[in-house]
Amino acid sequence: MSPTSIKGDDNMAYRLGERSQMSFLPESIEEYVSEDDPVRAYDAFVETLDFKEIWIIWDENKVGNSEYNPKSMVKLLVYGYSYGIRSSRKLERAICHNLSFIWLMGGLKPDHKTIANFRKNNKKALKEILKQCVRLCIKLGLIEGNTLFVDGSKIRASASINNTWTQEKCERYFKNIDKHIEGILKECDVIDEKEENNESLVKLKKELRDKEILKSKIQEIMKELKKEQKISINSTDKDCAKVKGRQGTHAGYNAQIVVDKKHGLIVTSDVTNENNDSNQFAVQIEKANEVLDKKCEIACADSGYANTDELKKIDEQNIKVIVPTQKQAYDRKPGPFGKEHFKYDSKNGCYFCPQGQKLRYSHFSVNKNHKLYRMENKTNCLTCKYYGVCTKAKRGRTIIRLGNEDTKEKLERIYNSKESKEIYKLRKQEVEHPFGHIKRNLGVNAFLLKGLDGTKAEMSLLASCFNIARMIGIISVPVLVAKLIS
Image 1: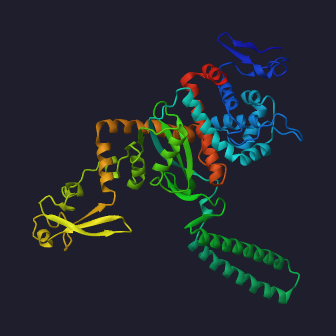
Image 2: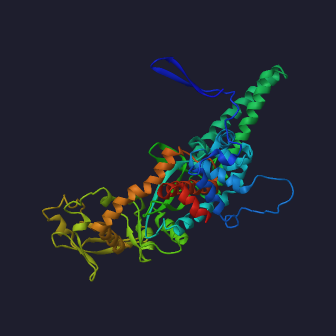
């Protein structure tokens, strides 16, 4: 019996299913999905990968105990991550119940342990997938590499913030554990005198053993803190950091991406355990240039990357750097006696205040890498009508000039140009889109793998999935598949 419509009255009809009907699926798995189904694009993409280059051994003449085809396993991870299915158990369920997964795997059904082990054992390979994906995008003319945007976002680690240990926390726990152990030993002595085989004594000895084990673990953590000179260590994931995000403080990582202006495709991804972006600009742009095999013309980021020493490294390569300072980003106007209103005389190495009084060079701070200029005659400040507004210091007004002040002023001028501000406006819609897709659409609120190697592999996989989804949106599934297999 086939599905039919059964009329309840003249105005309504119900369409009913029939589980006992003989024909439901096509005889061939190949017919499970249509020609324009996105799964075909993911399948074709993995087929184009050079498995030798991504460090996965591919041997068509392999002998011995059979194992699952590495290409099929990579296809499973790439396709699963693209639709927010990352858990090995959910992937196992998908290849048994989802037609597109069944088609992709050709009927193969690895269990969740096999999937988890393949992902864990091939971190290096998963990190390299994005590089090949970018080269493919360049070949298809989807990435130009002229203007690059950098951004970072905090993603939770597969660890609890409660497992983060500092020297202070270790010492505090030590005191409490020693008190507990002392109390347990006294109670044991009392019970020993009364009754040797009392059940409570067994419980106390177990509790004592647990406390001793915890004490030993904390001692190991303290040794590691001292050895690696770290402020804190998480006992679950030793590579993660204590990061601050919009959802509060948690154990996590700082994910970084570099995006191309043309279609918003990701050029490189990275993961660090630094709490902010101030040391990341030069590193990320140089990695992107290496993948592109050329220097970009413009590099842009938000004010979180405004570390002049870092920006200078890229500026010296004749790359236009568009990164605002905090003041510029928030459009803070300088006060009437801000540093911007003091004129610097480079020839004589001194400053002149808005009232024309001279500030001479005082000294250089090696630790802070800046020069300090002080009012030549403090009486000029004390008798000035703006004393108390410009400065309240009895020694007169001072000005700090950074060691790389010239570069800082140059970059500020670059950002203030109309052309630069137009490019900076594009930054938000291009570079924040991938993180929005990954976090909101795919539901990635935490990494599944532990350690920097694992999180970098996962981030690379997520970036590759974003790129493939964008490629499908730009040139359609049939055209993309045709280009990939040609």
